[in-house]
Image (tube, rainbow, N blue to C red; front, side, top):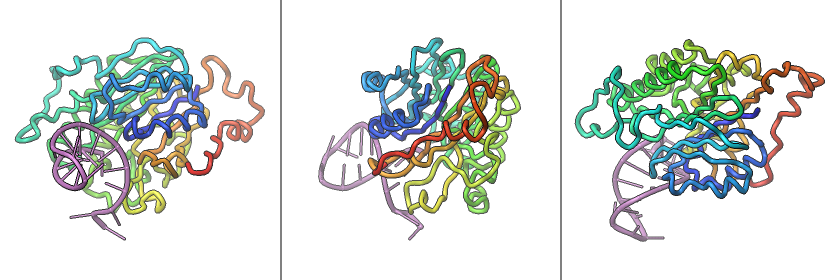
Length: 304
DNA sequence: ATGTCCCAGTCTCTGGGA
């Protein structure tokens, strides 16, 4: 089973690129973030023509998450199961907000959707950005991660994949220049602690498990030619529950999707391949090289 | 390089967010 996560930075603006990518990468599940659509505007019919069912949780202009699958899903859940539109603070959490940021509450935003597809619980998350360390927005980001951790603890399923834009670079090798990132969000001790707590609760960073090397990123600022200079960060991750770890056979970040025209998202998709449940890892495969070659994505057509 | 892209509303420009 191929599962991918991609912050598309507007599904409306990216529709053509997403369709081309589904055709090229052929995932069974695509977790999307920043669709920036209302549920009424979600392109269900377009996805159907591509052979995918679309589940969408949006709020309009900002945020928005979605899950596209090759077949029907069950047990859809959004917003950590908390009422959406009229958010209720979990009793165990407090959110210190003040001044003109009182209205800012990421737990009231469309940032989480879960579904079960062929026995795998898949979760699409879009973590808050945090803006500046020490601000109420940063505090709210940590609160949001605490809610995610609580939800995962309470909804533990042996086969769970949590993919999305975490807005956290887990380690220094996940940023182009750690020295230039000191004091910024995405790399702080607090954020990395939140990420580590997720791992400690029973998850593995799938891409990192397959690729120990640094210098591989999932996001590059649109400005200043940063992509072509590889000035980026690995902030999109696919966490898999430990029970799924033996089934992980391949993972990649598809930089090709960050290139060309029409305008790409500023994020690249992160892909994982899980072998089929109950099938021994090497069944049906002649060897590691062939296995990797078979999974490698074809080059996109010119222009993309 | 505070350099781009995307959105909605004030609507062919501006401001907010990333």
